[in-house]
Amino acid sequence: MQGSFNSPDTHKYSVILPTYNERKNLPVIVWLLAKTFTENHLSWEVIVVDDNSPDGTQEVAQQLAKVYGEDKIVLKPRAGKLGLGTAYIHGLNFVTGDFVIIMDADFSHHPKFIPQFIRLQKAHNLDIVTGTRYRATSTPHSSDAQPGGVHGWDFTRKLVSRGANFLADTVLNPGVSDLTGSFRLYRLPVLRHIITETVSKGYVFQMEMMVRARALGYSVGEVPITFVDRIYGDSKLGSNEIVSYAKGIWVLFTTV
Image (cartoon, rainbow, N blue to C red; front, side, top):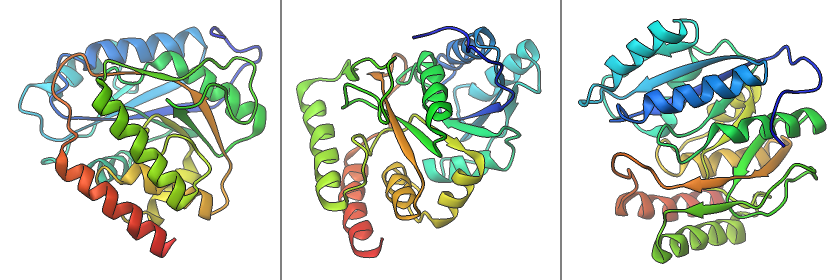
């Protein structure tokens, strides 16, 4: 179910958007975010954390700030590629919202799902809502759910992703179906707390965040999303990240 909320939402939503070479993607994802928040009468801002992209991503972000307002598009760049986890830590220093949304800038995560995240959070007073590619209905129960899925991946990549989540679920029992997803809504204080407890800074970061959330007793709900492979640019996932993922599961199993 899309569209405006039945009652006014007085909360502000901050999106932390890590970028590296996303010059072509950034204008459209920002337009979609602005459209989604505006149509649902929500207060919002986007924190762009750019890791010194050589393709002109920062210049595009500056132009977008002139279009939408410097209070809406906030560019907070870094000196270089320092890892996904540290990008969120950096972005958290500048958010002014009550809730924080983390997502990718490459259209893998469509902003149209954000209202569903917010509805589920409000309905059950949740600390975290995470998008899942591998569940057909929301948890806790929600009537506006639709099946999750992945588009644009070949069989091998789907198999690797499924296998990675199955391994993590079997070993760690985190209580969510999609540990490697990176489309989530957090209460700001909850995100601050979990991040201070999280050790990983790379690809394993998202998985550890969910495991830590469970260990700390935070409530988590899932909304099925459709994940679409990036349109422009190259995937940042390589063999090193896969090895790190396996090591990360072992470390979390032995320490959390």
